[in-house]
Image 1 (cartoon, rainbow, N blue to C red):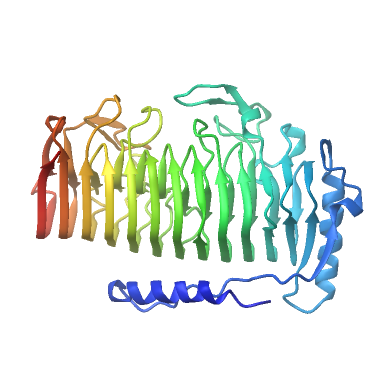
Image 2 (image 1 turned 90 degrees about the vertical axis):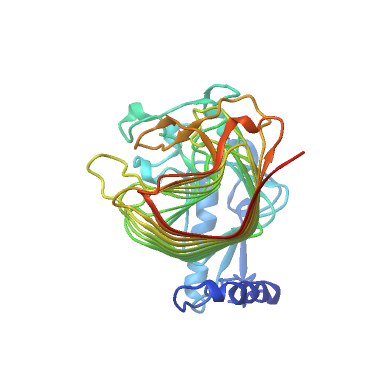
Length: 476
């Protein structure tokens, strides 16, 4: 395989040098990403694909993938083969991506996901338009698009939040989130997704599950802004992941690491643009195992319901996380969406009364600028303290520009739900160790009465606070 472009390596090195003084222990930089070379190429047209958007091309696409896989397997280890999609619209049921195969969806080509339950496997955890399981050296590229036709799953359109179709009557899954995801890599090694658009998922968009060495760059993700559960990138139990130069514009969480079956570590996300009606970056809420060694740098968050979030609900611990060089704009949306316009949000309350509490420690917020309709919310719990938080060079500007109700603290999911609470610049609960250095807080003059005070905390639950160069003032 070819080495990564020099510009990407230089960017990774600069980021490592910048963050080194804040590291809690030595750790290597992310591994070099796999960059599949051109190799052999098989066109889906040669296998009978119509590309007219009406007839299903599933068999032709799968035959091309299988032939490409056989070619790659016969070649030298680590070689890849491409399956080419010339311009056209390729309607398909689930196709299975295999080791050594890269889908080359060319500019002007779109892979369309089917909208019938018969288009997907019997098991709900395999409901994807494109699925790779246990594969190595796989990817998607080409400049084209994968489209889940998510609007076909809307039962009732609503500007507040769409009501969606659910396939739960089949018994394959429960609740109101029974819809197919768009692209999934499950138990894979050396995953590379780049230069492709992922559009209109019916449910989660790009799902990375128990993978090692994943590189995602120059990807555009678009989901309907009023559709719930159309997350941008969900990373479950996966390690050594790099996300860079991505644009994510969607209704639900944009970049969302989770832990269901094992820990998640060494995730780096840089140089991204995000807009969402939920959380731009969120750890959890699935958090049964630990998160460690995550870096989020040079990210722009626009008109989102929540900026940087952690919802730790299931006993996993969070340690050594850095958020740096981030611009945030958060605003209120309808309260059916989780979030209350917080630029930064951390909670560790247990999901259920019997759930274990996880702790959060060694979290750094460096060079953060936020314009928000609500304040920072830092809420640990008795058994899940927030420890050693650091805010350095942070500028917070608070002003109202929507008409939604304020004065509510949002502990969802589980916990206390929505609770009436005075608005403050920073709300703090159950913290041991908080360092605030060069933090500027500004308040809009016309509606400053909505905020009770800059800092809201009870000394009985918040200890070890250090302030240096903290400023609070009005602005016109």
